Image 1 (cartoon, one colour):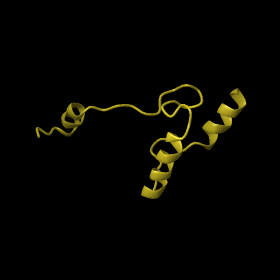
Image 2 (image 1 turned 30 degrees about the vertical axis):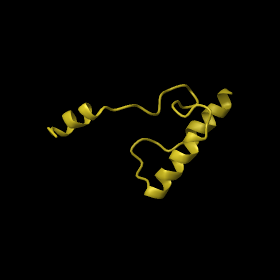
Image 3 (image 1 turned 135 degrees about the vertical axis):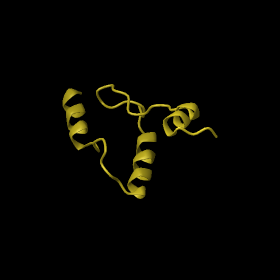
Image 4 (image 1 turned 60 degrees about the vertical axis):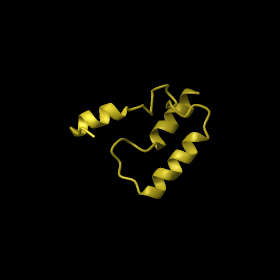
Length: 63
């Protein structure tokens, strides 16, 4: 299992890598088909929830 996790991480899209919309959509579809879509093979979270309040605060918007 550790070897597979290592290979999976090496092949994964890295943070801040620009992707086309089609690639993003494909990744979401493939991710949703996995057994653990919220965690990487090492158990680290790869998806997080952001509230509308947090988005507004970050954008300094009051709508």
